Length: 379
Image 1: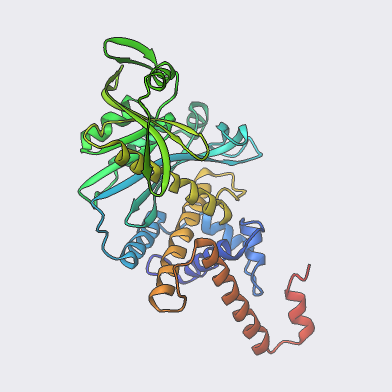
Image 2: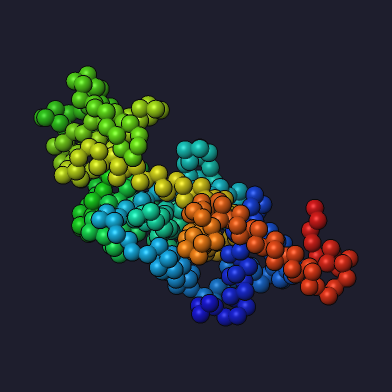
């Protein structure tokens, strides 16, 4: 509250609550405003994003501190930072920083692309970094320096403050390159990244494409069954592999027994066992869970032309996710619920509470019933 003026704080509360309770409806400014009986002038909410007199970094930092305090001591010997990017489809080429980006589900679409990081430790998954990518043309139009997604990821690494003895960074094949590996080494971090099957490497004095090495390991019977987090994997670890521009590393090939999905991993954790590396790598799925919840809270559902307003909206969605996580932990601590709720169930808890507030507001209203009904969108 101390970061806002009184009108700004009211806009903040409305926006945050609106993102949480909108459900399957739209999560843009117009739709959020229509969720309230006593609606404000929409231009006021628009200015809250487009002409902010407050600092988004300070507000997000406060939210992180709240969740870290609520989660209690982080006693895990290992912490993870997961890096990935997600696209938010847009339809107007006149929107700042919008360009054609590739999605594994949508293909190549006009969109905003956010490079994000997630902090994982002792059951905590905390959004901990969000940067908007734009291609060279869009950056030139905006008058800012162009940065690749890898460079944005390296900036997220530079800003990390370790809370455990060992930090392991996890990413997909897009970010497995010399720059990210070197930046981890400079900070004393370890890393595990997926690697494309056509990458060239050297093993025992011979040149391979990775898929050729995979075939050799299969033919030699090098795969073994390992149990990791209750799941059976057929996996193989190959040490002393040299990858040009990246150095000597370990390659781990794992196949989930139930689905036969093959994952090829590259890591500098040469001192870890096969089971340990697979266990570490599995933490990467938590960023997919975060994206799913963030999209349900309205990530990308905005109609601003200015990229600064879009970035504020994306940060507020991440903050809403953080506040919901803090809330569900408090509900358990106060014995309001018997077990830790999911984020989705916590949203439903909030929606039910807002319905109670709505009923009390109608009951206590001094306006005629007809006037109250006019204020409610009964459609």
